[in-house]
Length: 261
Image (cartoon, rainbow, N blue to C red; front, side, top):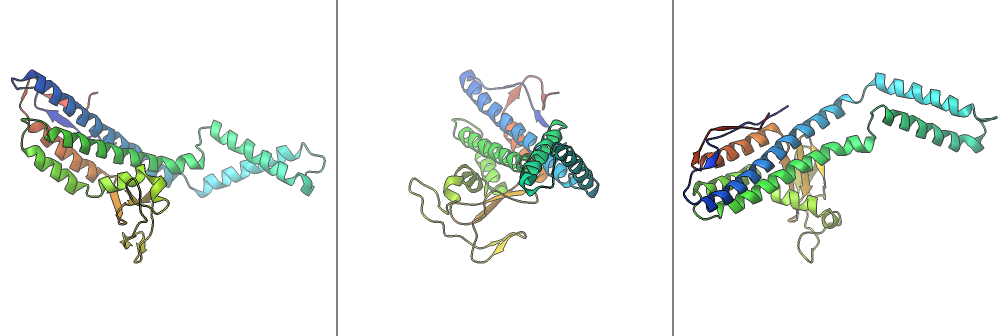
């Protein structure tokens, strides 16, 4: 498990204007919340893809096949002539239903659940980054904040150059899936070439909700394919930015170590 630690130089902001400090502290708490949402989503994503890799084995396949055959024989015993083609579909359906329910009761997830978990956690990571970006954009525009916040926001953009485009496509699949761009009256996409080591299409291709290793990607509204890496290095980049944001302010009171126990 990856846990990214933050040291706050104090408990409260040390400025004379307490109303201003209270407002800024609220924005900083929101940044902290999104930071740890991203941290949690990363861990859940990595757990999902590791579980998927370990879930397939010859031994497991044989055990499930044998159990399915046992259930089928139990179902066939209810019929006078189970080999009659008239009953084959009914026997097959009941066998599958009983086998699946038994598997689910034992804790096994349906294949659709297992497949979608990694994508769900990847999008959670994506959305946490996007919210962090938005809160940072709000923070840098407040009066009397440290000027370095402008540079830190630019650094965030450099670290995640495709974030907004990939996130927007995830939020507007109803348009992208039809090959349309952004806006109130979206126009057909002009697809751009892709070559990311997983997909190569010189004439362009519409790619949505794709996982290339740890990289979650979408065709963006401008027709280019974009990716966000759901990985510890991405979280390390976010960690560095957040710690620098915290350090940019003046603090008072005891130092704080995050996250809590």
